[in-house]
Length: 107
Length: 119
Picture 1 (cartoon, rainbow over the protein chains, first blue to last red):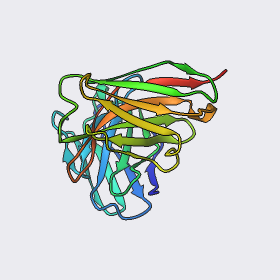
Picture 2 (cartoon, rainbow over the protein chains, first blue to last red):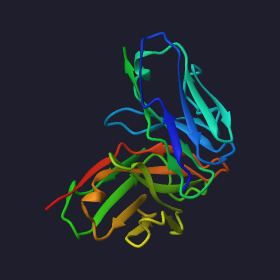
Picture 3 (cartoon, each protein chain N blue to C red):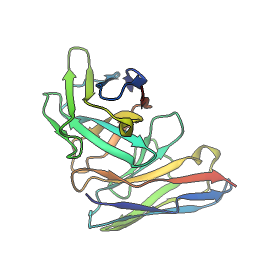
């Protein structure tokens, strides 16, 4: 199975900050890499698919980049609603696998 | 929308059975596969399997011997059956939708159902 490693595991930031979360795949996944936002008790939400494509309805302050094994999710101008856990997922190979998540907390 | 339902407590060695109800669209869409994913503190998020509305299903190798997924198109529902459960199967279980495009992203999830395996 392809291992997905996220860093950091947690992050503290303030409203208005810019933060970056990284995801590394144990082998080349091309651009078959997606990012999700998850809040406790809620359904996880797709925010970025295909490494850099913004899911419909997601604010443009979310951007992402990468290909191969190295990927990054950047959130600019953090808003109160953005504090959540973010995880990556590869769909290059079966089984699809996920990162362990990055918990973004308010400083 | 997707909504999971089922018992929150299952005894060891028994069978876990969950239902996912699809609303706001047809489960018969050719654009999607329907999936089950679980989350545990130990293993994080784990894809269990995917099923097409025709009933064709794919399972993760580690659970394949114990898992069956099925679909009822008349009720717009799909199901997860996991046999011979142990404490290690205690998890939040999510149903979801996987786009059938090249990207295969999970573009819709339910809010999850906590299942505890305990006597």
